[in-house]
Each structure stands twice: as structure tokens, then as C-alpha cells.
Amino acid sequence: MNAEKIPNDQKKPPETTRKKKSGCIVFLLLILSILLVLTSLVAVFGYDVWRVAFNPTLVKQMLTDEIINSPLVPRILEDLSLRRAQERVESGESLSGVNEPDVILLLSYVGYEEWDQIRSLVITEDFVTHVVSVSVDGLYSWIDSAEAAPQFVWDMSELKERLIDQPGEDSIMIAYEQLPECTDEEVADFTGRLGAVPLGVEVLYNLCQFPDPWYEDQVDDYIHALIDINQNIPENYDFNQLIGNTGLSGGTLAAVKTFLRLMRFVGHWGWIMPLVLIILIAAIGVRSFGDLGKWVGIPLVIIGLLLLGTVLLVKPSLLEMLTNAISAELSDLLHSEIMASFTRLSDHIFQPMLIEGAVFLGVGVILIILMIAIKPKKHNQTVQVEEEA
Image 1: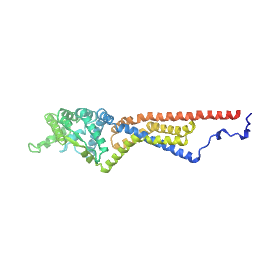
Image 2: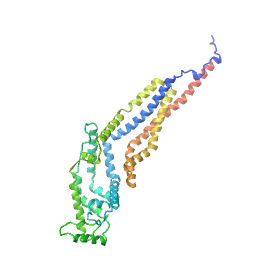
Image 3: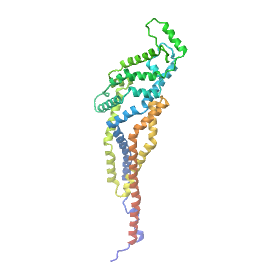
Image 4: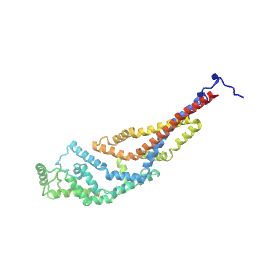
């Protein structure tokens, strides 16, 4: 018995053989896909920041290396010297005034190379490691505590010992050698002031290198001034004292604590929401490779492109904005060094993000290729069956 041939005008077009989704379902899938993009970006950013910021060993290693090996600290000290020198010019301080010299004025002559030498003399790797370790551990403990501010104390004994020992004297000599030699007028000013006071009254030297017979006494004055400074440094420096000096309010610290807790939560659990959204999309609208490519593949491509764009295009602008926010009035050299420091530290976050973005993009492209390649094949098979019938 031959099957009855269906007239051509009664054949269903191939595109109507599948039941179309209702407008509400399509709209829902569109919303879910947008949410998938947004939550995935938050999850990736949160995870990469958490992976670095809440890794005590990595944080200690990065900060210690930045303080000891990078030019950042000498550049900061150089900038302070430049600012002090500029203040002297703007305020009209006399180079031969009775209030000179002191160690702070002496340091206004110190440049980057000299600060780098002083750092290597006075600040040891053990001291930096101690300060960084105590600070990082104290910060992590504070996050989950009820304390209003981080509670930790720096042991300053090693630094104090080096300041009053040979490294301190060598540092004074490095700074002293940056002073210009005294002119005849400056020597005459000093001797004139010396002769105008009773015997035994101290007369401060001008801010220049005096020749003999005053050279040794001038250097000894600077060394004793450094000893006086050292006596004002406590053996144990309470971090809360530093916070009080910076004027940070309790509300600011509470906001920082809340942000750190939120960042930790997102880093731990941020992946759950994108996973739930993918399951919902699959349950509601994925019935073929075409659906998979449309509702999952395209969002993954968008996620990958946004991640890659953030690393390659947005990251430099973000770092520049952050640098400008904290160093708008600093010297160009220090500004550049802070920017370089931020770049080195942020690479621990952004470099893995580059790989993650490529993975998202690659998986999304594969799903879209499957959507395009498999759909025409099914269409041709349907047409061929209908023509044979």
C-alpha cells in the first residue's frame, strides 16, 4: 500500500517544524543572559582580588619585595626632601639663620641615590619583614574582630639600634656630603654669631660644609641631632597611633572592614549565582545546540571580551586614575614610580584574568560555531525527507 503523497501546498515549511518560544520565555531568557554576564564579571573580579588580597604569604612577599627592592621608598623620601627644600625657598628661610641646621634641613639636600644608600644602611630586610608580617596578620585578624581599628605593634628596636650605631653615622655622612661647601660670607656669618654669645652657648652651624677646624664639630652636631630623634622613637610603635595621626575616622575604618568582608564573600561564593543562572537558562530555553549557542555561547563571548578589554584597555586608565588620586601633587618621578608599583602589584590580579577571559571567549565561540554548523545540517535533512515523501 502506497503512502498518500502530500501536496506541496500542504507541506509545512521547515522553519515551522519546531515550536517557537513565547515572547515571555524569550524575554526571560534575555534577562537571565544579561544577569549571567553581570554576575560572572563580578564573580571573576571578586575571585581574582580575593585570591591575591587574602593570601597572606603572597601579600607579605609582594609588599616586602616592593619596600626592599623597588625604587618606591627612595623616591618617596626624595620627594619629601624636594618638598622641604621648596618650603624653605617659598618661606624665605635664610641659609644662615640661627635655627639652622638640623637633620630635617640637612635631608632637604638628599636625592634619590643617596636615599637608596641610606635605606640599605638603616632599614634591614629583617625589619621590613617584621613590619609587613605583623601588619598583614593584624589586618586579617581585625576583619573578623569587633575592634574599631587594627591592633598591632611594630618592634622598632632594631631600627633604633642602627640609627645610633655606625649605619646611622654613615647615613649622616651621606647626607652631609650633599651640602655645598661654605662660602667666605657663610663662615664669617657663623664666626660673627659665635663671637656675639657668651662662652659655652651653642651656636648652630650654617647649612653648608665647614672647613677645619669646625668640620668635626659640625658633623658631631648632626650625629647628636640624630640621636635626639632616635630617642623620640618608641621601642614599640602602636599602629593606632599612626591611625590617629592620619585622621582616619571610625566610619572610614568600618567601611574598609565591610568592603574587605564583602570582597572575601564574593571571592568565596560569587561563582554560585552564574552557575544557578546557567542551570535556569538550560532548563527554560535550551533544547538544541542552537539554543545553547544563543543563550549561553553569546553571553560567554561577551564576558570574555569584557574581561580582555578590562585587562588590555581599561587597566592602564584605572591605575592612572588611582595614582592621580593619591599623588596629584607629587613629583613626576615619584608619580611614575607609584604607577609602576601599582602595575607590578596589580599584575597578580590582572594577568590570570587575561587567561580567564580567553577561556570564556573560547568556550563561547565554540558554542556559537556549533549553533551555526549543526542547525543548517538539521534543516537540510528535514527538506530532503519531505521531498522523498
